[in-house]
Amino acid sequence: KTPRQLTNNKAGASAWRPTLHCVGCIVEGVLELYCILDEDMHKDSNQNCEVISHALGLVQQELALRGLTMPEVLALSYDNTAREGKNQHVAKYMMWLVSTGKFRSVQDGACVKGHTHNSLDQRFSIIATLLSRETTLETPEQFIQKIRQHLHPCRGRKLVVQYLKATHNWQQFFLPWEISISGIAAGPYQPDVCHSKRFLLRQDLCDMELPGWQSEKPDVFATEPEHAQDLIMCVKQFWHSTSLSQPPLVVLPHSVACR
Image (tube, rainbow, N blue to C red; front, side, top):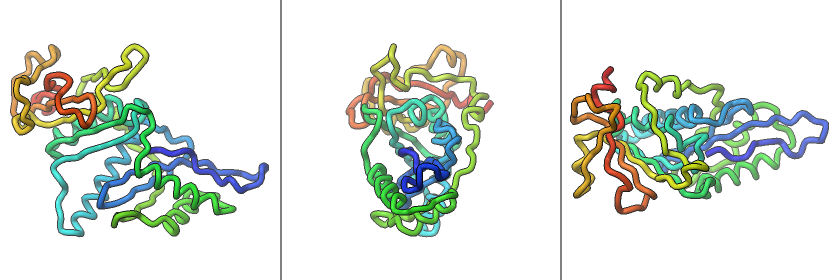
């Protein structure tokens, strides 16, 4: 999630006022990650994938210290906005996590309203209150120091606050797949879309107990051979929906992923 800009509001009208962005990620029971970014950093899918990747790396380290391994299933939740999370680039990132064996399945969900008021918004409210008490904050490091000193994580989570200076170009990374997924985000000509999708391998499709549903293969993959490690996408209208909105769809055949 990305809140409003962090600005020193107590400085005089003629004083230089640094403006930064803060992106947060909560991993329940493990950590709270807050990344401070410069104002000119794009709030897009590259940033979203970078923060998630960074959080997953920190989670793996923290679980290792506890003698635990990473879970098999990843569930993501973010605002209903096409700019950051609900787009084909993040969908391809989810596909990549499954196709490379990092997770057995990855599922996401977004509420219908564009801005989702959840526990992370409450944490941002506390951060804004803490920073508003300061009279002088001039560098990203000073913002980070104040957050580390005064913000107390909840429910046994570990606090991590870092300065994110750049992101990888995830959009460019997935171009060799030469696939495009449409209909993920709502638009003026397509207002009704599904808000939850799950990616998993064909060999695990039987565990979902989908009587009467048969997987479909797009025409672009018609000549690709069927394989147990074909990547399948299952979509529902909402996270809590009890049935799929369309047949399971082959989105990345194993043969294409290998190439």
